Image 1 (cartoon, one colour):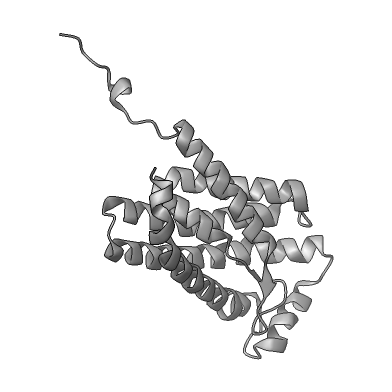
Image 2 (image 1 turned 120 degrees about the vertical axis):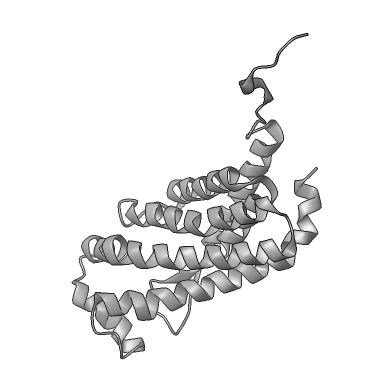
Length: 206
């Protein structure tokens, strides 16, 4: 009787099919990222896009590691075709914030692929994204915008104050502008994911 090694029994994370699906969803996410837009109730440099829908769909169908790969591919394609105005600081932060959303959501859904766990995963993922957004905006993104756009931090804060008068400093900015923006983004992206995933998941599971 032959014995199989532990390595031989481990399922492959990236099969040819998974790689192909990851590449396709990464390209879709990149295209969706291009169609970003501002919301009038937030500073204009906060852009909403629906690229995380493609990442979440991939995460639900294939797991958290492919979700990270889709997120990374989206960012790489965006850098190649759109470039960066923040020496790639903004793109790295976008990647981390996206992973903070998609990884917890796909991990929770992976445990039990039910509607209940999908909703739980999306809620927890959105909250993780919001928390990551607060930290990264306060310590990384706002300072990066200020540096690379040659704009004093008070000017950035003033852009928030013009829309939300209660904003007086950087902390107020991330709490009163960044946080609600990410909560809205999380809610919209989650709703779209729930609406389309059931219809396209049979294709992704072939």
